[in-house]
Image 1: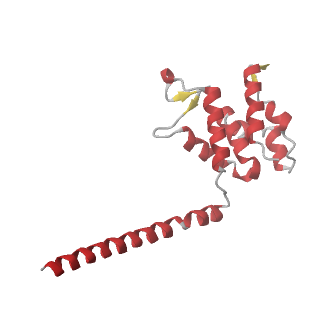
Image 2 (image 1 turned 90 degrees about the vertical axis):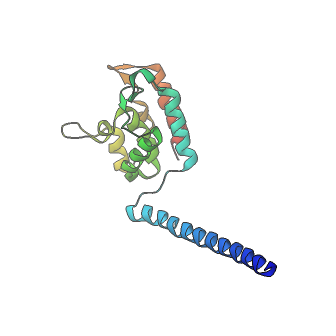
Image 3 (image 1 turned 135 degrees about the horizontal axis):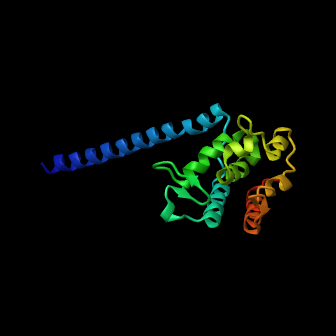
Length: 171
């Protein structure tokens, strides 16, 4: 009986090891589809370090106004069960056609509104988007131009735009 119990213990350890290996292989198989999904949609995931810089920049400049939830910053509405990162990822996906500048445009869209940039109905496209669509990446002045409130330049917003551009623009 002593031999049998040791044999059962070894068999049990072997089965646990096999189960662990099977789970690991299943896990690898499942995550092997993620790059293919991005390839199928033509969307590349944002660089994690750059994305985190964008999130930090937004949080620093806008702040989280707890007394006006679900609105944060300057009237941006966060949808139920959504966080800033999820919202920014969604905008990044919408702006993916701008290639290297997708995260920069998504960050600006988070602040001023996506349709204010790309146009909608009678609202024309911004000069920033027009330049990017024509292949011209010299967009510093156009990016910084989103610094006004009621037609007047706001120095704090101007500093913010310059910081965003410095952090997120990829030459």
